[in-house]
Length: 396
Image 1 (tube, rainbow, N blue to C red):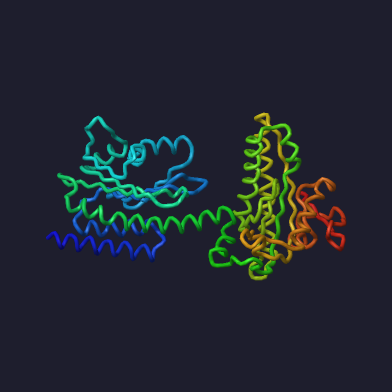
Image 2: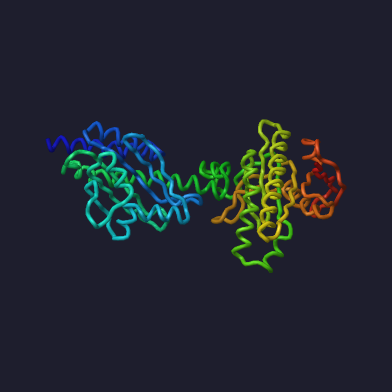
């Protein structure tokens, strides 16, 4: 019987490793593991895999199987609420006491420790709870994984089940580490470079000079008189305002299918690639994003003024043309961005906003693709551009 049990565990470890090499979803691994443990007679009530995140929106997450609700993902946010939730967890208790393993009989009646989770588990008839922490090597926020199991058998886990969990935990932790590392590479690269760009980088476009010429609508946004605020306000407040203003631009860009390529001080460069040879569609999306960004900025400024803070206006220039979209930089420090005459022209047009008295400007090439609402406001020599440019303004 003991040999059979060990053989079952060996087969389960082999399955975990195979899944880890073929799956990119911790959910699927946990779901498959639970299914197999139940088939082996484990009276499971709850199984969870919890990990920290490298994510601007969350400090950690847990993939949880609960007998009555199946699989779910629980997210722990940053801030006081997230910290309070963490401090009331078995993981925090183990970390605080330099422990890598904990086992509790339920319902918990000792005076040593109890957690809200234990009350919830006891209400579902759970009798025994095991948690194991497995540290990861390296110096990133992915410090390790917490793996827990709860059962409702009258005597709790059998000795054979505890031994099996001890044996399978390293394999499961290794799989979680591999999947989480890929998730971090994918998600965080998208945060810093944009979804379209990150996909190209991960597909292997990493050589300096590598890229392609594409047609795109270009959105160049700049915050007005932002530099002067640094002399009158604390850096923390300046950064907060900058983030709010960028959010007002970036959200509409992404909602309309564009991608932000670069933040340059108090400016934003975004592109809307032309698909299937239809520049009018790309320009329409860029214009919608620009108008939404202007409206969001106006609403943001109303709330700022109500708080006694300064309004921060924005100027936006739109253009369409050919750009080089790819890797530029030094051999070991690259930037996947857009360069070219069209990008320069968009930036030069933006500087004319104060001169013409309008905040949403466009080139003649862009205005030709979205004529309704644009009116020519003059012809100007642009620095670094050979021919004078006809400049148009959006007038509601």
